[in-house]
Length: 93
Image (cartoon, rainbow, N blue to C red; front, side, top):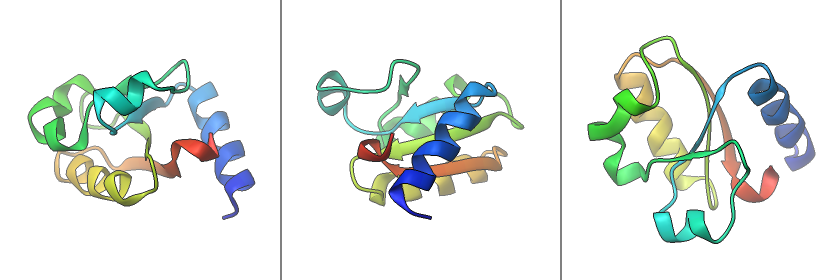
């Protein structure tokens, strides 16, 4: 998908009620993020996955460039959250 297609799909899903999850550091999050985003740094995600929602929660995840969002996708899947859209970069929002 192109960045434009990723953006359109992510916005559509969030509009449908999907959780928007930012897995960057709190410092990066403070520098700017989409209004609807929740911040749980990827390194804290295994301990805080319950804050995302119960298994079955639908999630759009992103980070700065895509590496951490890919790791977050694996973590979420291992906790029963399987409906995940990886936006990759916050810049694609």
